[in-house]
Amino acid sequence: MDRIRLVGGNPLHGDITISGAKNAALPLMIASLLSDEPLVLTNVPRLADVKQLERILENHGVDIAVHGRRRGESDDGGQRMTFHAADIVDTTAPYDLVSKMRASFWVIGPLLARCHEARVSLPGGCAIGTRPVDLFLFGLKELGAEIDIDDGYVVAKAPKGGLIGARIVFPKVSVGATHTLLMAATLAKGTTVIENAAQEPEITNVAECLVAMGAKISGIGTRTLTIEGVEKLHGANVEVIPDRIETGTFAMAAAMTGGDVFLRGARADHLQSALDILAKTGVDLTTEAGGIRVTRNGNGIQPVDVETHPFPGFPTDLQAQFMALMTMSQGTSHVRETIFENRYMHVAELARFGADIAVDGQLATIRGKSQLKGAQVMATDLRASVSLVIAGLAAKGETIVNRIYHLDRGFERLEDKLSRCGAEIERLAG
Ligand code: EPU
Image (cartoon, rainbow, N blue to C red; front, side, top):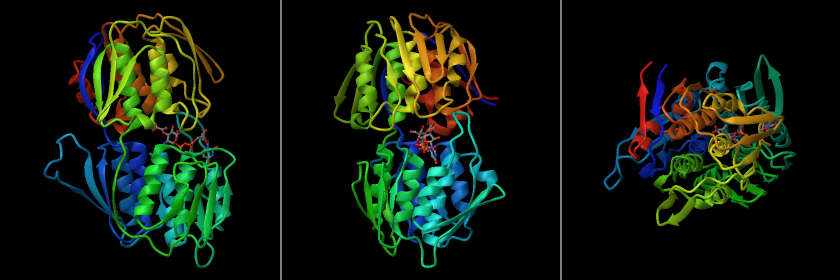
């Protein structure tokens, strides 16, 4: 297995181009199942999760093509890809494919809407929590689906003639359940209202893609989505939004090391809460044409308390990275994780750098002023892994991050982007 070796201490200086958002690209790819016409996506990041979803979609019969660079496009831009689901040949998403990536469960929405049936393996738990699918099943039942669990699979059948529009009031905000029900409702008969919908920018990206495909959706970007079902969706051309979690991660890396980094393509309106928190820590953030500049010139990091919340709150996907930053602050800070029950696996690994963090249930207390020292570390999920990389950038001496396949799931050319800004970082082949 590949590892990353880095030597901390260099401030970051330079430009980092932000890639397309993993968590938008995945549901956009899944949306291609809704139409027999091609969906063209641009700015698709080159990530292991994208590759894995390609395998799943191909198994359903989707033809996938990656196109070359066009005149005027930069060489570090994302991929232009076509997804053509002319004929869905298989409505089963098997265990060996779904178990590798939870978001693949979301195919259940479009398959059920278009083919009136779906058999999708339950995704199982994962390192950050149990992550049940009750909200998905509740919503699909509201649209008239009959659901059975058989041999580890969710077997869903639409009523004769297809799904029927309904009012769905989610008891809890879920990104995945919102994506899935939104997609399912586009082809249902009549009107669907989704209340307590997730409002993440990735949901908006998908809703706008569905509108470009001919769906009728109002309330995009709000807690209530209203969908008038249509007979058929057509092809479209849609751009994946920039990755706000990658943006926040590099902003925190620059905050930790000091320096001056321009995050090209980053959108401040997609991560305002995290930028506000970073500003309170003493980092300078300026929104410029085409991106965000992050600077810290020698001044200390102030301790700030944070609670994770659904958008527009502080994202759980930046919690580990923020905790790494707080280990260097001038005092004591607190982090409360409210989305996932088990998202503190990075705590034990950060301790290997000399960090002082105590966890009590969902509350972590971070005593700052640590001069981190390089260490051998390893993490069990994507965001935890990258928190170890940014801690290593600020630590004294050499750090080896093991098991980096998690990083490849969600960060495009991480070592390359950081080394271009002066970090001493390299990949060691396993
Ligand atoms: N939940 C339920 N029942 C359900 C669905 C969710 O109880 O049927 C719970 C979850 O267990 C969790 C909470 O609701 O406690 C929120 O989960 P949500 O469904 O919103 O998460 P998700 O859709 O599975 C997406 C991202 C995650 C991100 C979360 C929260 C993608 C592909 N994944 O997951 O991203 O942390 O939203 O913002 O979009 C990552 O990229 O590293 C990652 C984990």
